[in-house]
Image 1 (tube, rainbow, N blue to C red):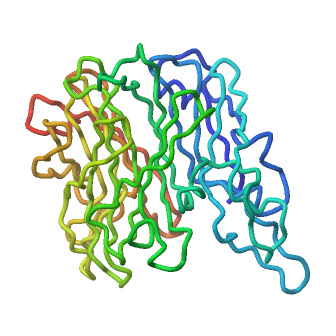
Image 2 (image 1 turned 90 degrees about the horizontal axis):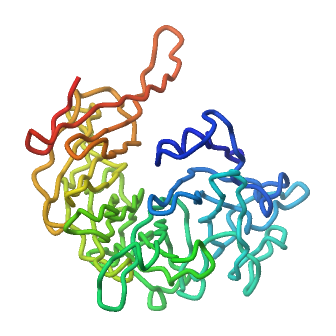
Length: 386
């Protein structure tokens, strides 16, 4: 993958109405990230967040390989991921200038090594810190969200400041099972900062409960209820897929966990979907979670019906403790894609967006189509409007 850029004006305007020049690209991975050599110049799967309470700074995340060892030289050249090195980058930029910078933290690194040399600590890293100290490795797939800070009495308020949540995959650093931090191959972890990255919390493992030694949790999305009118203002949510077996077509349900203490601890996951994932095409992935001004929680993911892709949505009215029956959104399609998002347009309307992939004859070109649909809350769990 190449280094990534974003449409800065479009991204900022989509997150919140702020002054920006639509279509003006801004390079996110600048400064610490080199133009060469590989793999330290490789980033992909970016995420983006803007604080609605103080819309002056954009924060981005990406799968980041700046701390991996350089590729080997000669006929035995190879470029594997360096064992134990994290891969969840973070970048900050003033909205006014869109000039991104990548902080340098201390942790486990191999950026000064050449394959097959191992990494070492302490050393400079460009990824979210404190994973090495927790016996973990940050493994990318980042999403980010802002919410209010909780005070010592348990009250959430923007008067206390704004908290940035950063979710990603994580793996155990230890290879001996008795020394591992959690069961399974990959878990979901969330870190947070109240000062735009100056100090980060230790990572909290979201998916630790109900995760077996064969589980690979994947594709997380984090969100914080940021509406002061909500009865669950400040509550944080993570939606993800639990691949419960390493066998082909193993069970893979969608799950949501929530946090009531600012991301320090997380609830047992609530399963939203069936688990079946067989040769008849019943798998699911790509969950997104959002809240509205009343505190209702909306989880949307890609599912399958008769081997064709659909989107399903489940709604919670009690702060993520329980969810109603998932409802299908849209007609079944050959491949609706794995990326979906839901956002609030007005207190009574929602926008659901996804990507469709279609193969056109005779050249079989892959066509990406972005579709927007509004959901009206006048109907139970919403309804797709034309």
